[in-house]
Image (cartoon, rainbow, N blue to C red; front, side, top):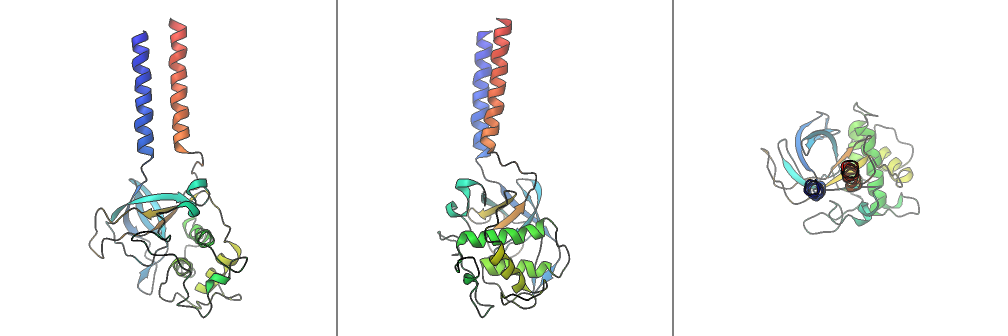
Amino acid sequence: MKKKLFVVAISLIAMLGFSMAALGQDPQIELTGVSGTNYGGYYTGIYYGTLSGVPTNFICDDATHDVSIGDIWNTNTWGLATGANDVANAPNGQFTTSTNQPTYHLATATTSASYDTLCPGGSCSLQDAYDAVAYLAYLLLSKTYTTDPPVSAIQYAIWSIMDNPPAGPGNNNAVAGLTTSDTGYWIYTALTTESGYQNPAIMFYSPDGNLITQGPDYDMTAQEFISYNPSAVPEPRSLALMGTVLALSALVLGRKRLFA
């Protein structure tokens, strides 16, 4: 009996080690389709794909790079409300300064005034920008808006905050008094009122290197995607797994006392 219990204990420890190693691996994205909404030659709104094989809807915040259907890439995963993994500590975020990554900026090419002054306090940080983009992505991924307009205007607002795309629908100046059909309306709204937006169900997937598998078009670079999972459990996965293993260990020890 003691030998059997020893074997079970070793097996549980091995399961914990292998499982935690697996959980430590960030997911892989494959792009499988687009919603069909289009403006200016760019697909806008929800993109369809898989996250480590699980069907998932995404929003793209990166207008610098291109991906096509069939592309597969590894990611670094992080969220706005996950402690040490928030944007301030995400060295591999697509819009942080790192090797082979574009440097984040609030775009000014399509507007006469810098977006940078819109955040509370008169200056936008990288955290402010990602918060605002998370809010806009939520509006699309939660299907608060499903028709165009304003889907393309929201999408171009995301790209304009994080990148430097061509002009989007309607008025692109980020000022008060515009309509929901204007790109500038969403830029202004997101940066002035949502720069502190924190939603644990919003996750960012920054490329971890170039494409693993390339589709029929474009190049080997990947894009940063955003997902929304309202059923996500905020508790760290490793702690949940450890709790399961400890419970199983307690069961084994209980059986030992019962049948000794």
